[in-house]
Picture 1 (cartoon, helix red, strand yellow):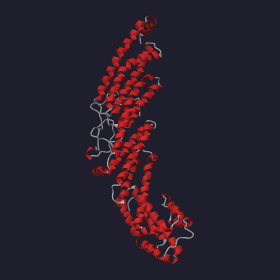
Picture 2 (cartoon, rainbow, N blue to C red):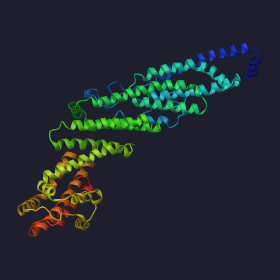
Picture 3 (spheres, one colour):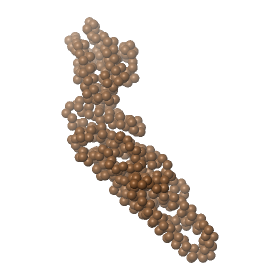
Picture 4 (cartoon, rainbow, N blue to C red):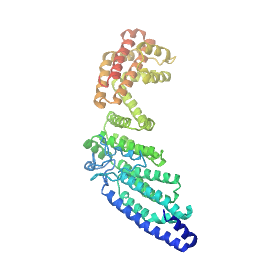
Length: 492
């Protein structure tokens, strides 16, 4: 800065010389910054590692193309027992935007994912911008408008080189998370410089954005097509070869990675709308594949197990509960279907009776009584509620004595065996899952309430038969014991 007075003198008395000095300075520094950026990118490029290839989509027709682990390692990745689409801590690149991840120089022979390289190079650029802009303003004593002209010329070649470099890095990348993280860094850098008055770099940030977002959209569409294009038969083969839960984990990890990026983007609308799109495609695939199974019970079991696995994986991640509502709603529908299937299969006479003789008020109250809040209700409370709240037609359809005897005898002789048989088939189909517990609860409470309705109906029409019926409190006690077992453990 010791020559600043001379520069001012030239500006005021020898404008042609002053302009020449400005042009020479601009040309010299342009070459210097370009060479500096070239050296930096050359050094950091040796540290760069591409984690993914063209086969690393959510699903593949050929199981041999599905990688369960990433062969490449990177210094900035955490190791967790998840899928290859897990973030592995990469989102932490945004914890301190002004901190150079290399703190000067990268570790010898260490490898890093592309967003780390992107952050480091751009931090260097930002330092160049701030220091150079301040120097040219003060040294040449320029107005802000004139300084932008000179300054833009100084960094033009370096910026164009960086645009070409990042185009080379990202246009053929299959690292959807790395692309999103770089896009976020680019956006935040733009906001940071704009807030400091450096608006003249917008064209650079926009150029980078035009590289990153189209590539993200292209990759996102490829992931979606890997779901929509796979045949049901091939997906079943994929499940058999790799284990369905591993495929669910890949899907969940990709959704969660996108969700974490959407939070970093302050709920970016482009991401916010794409996450449900990805979820809907995968759930539609589950429903489509279920049709390949022969029996209704197998189809329902497949959907319940799949959705239960997916919801569990989401529950141990950072996905908010409201984002799972759609999946949980479908799971609840299939749980109810399976419970109804079990009731028809094991208590067909009782359910036929309910269908014919219970009125709408009875069914409404039954739904209330089998809610989760009723699980801890005492036997006496249940009986009192039934007496107070269950209503029957004032002129009920006549219940024949023979039908009443058949239903009563069938229930008395085998209801405990049927309860245990349904429990055993559920244990076989659903293991110790949350769905297993939910299905059994609803099934047992349905049996309990339906039998109470039967008991009262027989008492009204054929009171002499009640002595042959299992007392309500005995049935409730047996069912209550099983409900407590469900509460205390997922296994009987």
